[in-house]
Length: 541
Image 1 (spheres, rainbow, N blue to C red):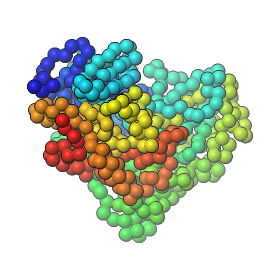
Image 2: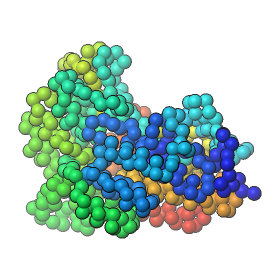
Image 3: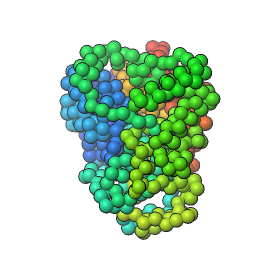
Image 4: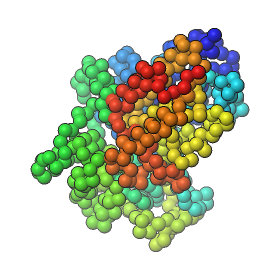
């Protein structure tokens, strides 16, 4: 008799599936598995749905994928009834959308909010996972899924004296739900990644004095955000089917044609014209996708990198500040590039100052402010825009133990290892959604989330129909996939940068290229072939 009974009513402590995270991944997983008759419980640390869009409420938070493309495709009525207001949706609008999805499909009744999963241990005798929460609850499930998101484990800076600061401290990944007013305040922002680049112009509009502490400059492109016209929405709604199909089989999960020319197949004038067109278009793809070899050939990338540095020098009036803002240590695109609204122009304001931490590092945070090797600063508030322990942090923050008590944190100590970014050898009946080794952060996350959820849901349905109790990635298949991910990554410029793609922003974290750069469409085909071959590379028992 199969272990999973369709439509069975569980006890208060037993489920077919337990998942962690109520962002778009956890919500869609719950919806899909419910439809197949599985009993599901989702645990969420926050007080509401939305995942990264629940937590990241900092000023200017906005998606860098077009709102029409960054949306759910699994329900045609949902597609037709929701109207996006802007080209790139803001955090509040995306959160409203997430709440709409939760309400429309009545998902909240199977989500336990304000609950952190502390541990998950595989019971080999009963072939079930035992999950323990911070509320003292213990439940069991046949399958355990981490839908915790790639950018959900925030990273604090390694600076002495933080606890002694007398003013207000904020982290962009844990922004207060009530509006923060910096009017007449002296504000420090530490970091110049995406969240800083989006928030700095808005904070500068309020603060009496803003000082930005930068260790590594990043490339940023103007978003050219604007309201969506009714005809744009209507056209998208009329052609959603075609758009979605294209996105599912594209390289990055977006509606974008792949270039067929090298940066050196055209004249200097034509190359520059393409870069200007990309800059003016207000999307990263217009520049990253201008030529086919920008992410594989350093000389080709140098042409677009120098174009962008030229734009920074045009915008920023002080030559020393402009040079400090020009990235020199990594090719464009190898660190997550940003979309901004007036970021570089903000440094032309008289009350905004840039401090180059490579020249004068921070020594300590004092009760009054920040000391560097050259100067002492007084502040009323400090904003940490110091990013995340990306892709793995939220997973290993839970004490996950598989067969024979194997700790996932220990297994990943030398670098994350998965099969397809979905399964892990030594961890039966355990899945990760958009885990390391999948396209994830190098793609439109909505497309990758839905592909993973559909694959997992179809897999569990297959196991049930064939009376299979456990599924586990084979060690050899995992090793081969890890090698393939690295081989494909090594064909690109990505490993040349000290980026969070490599885990380089977290002290002590193994340097491994975490996402799969082979493309969304290619990856989907591989996953489909694995399933069609009876889940090749997995042990079913």
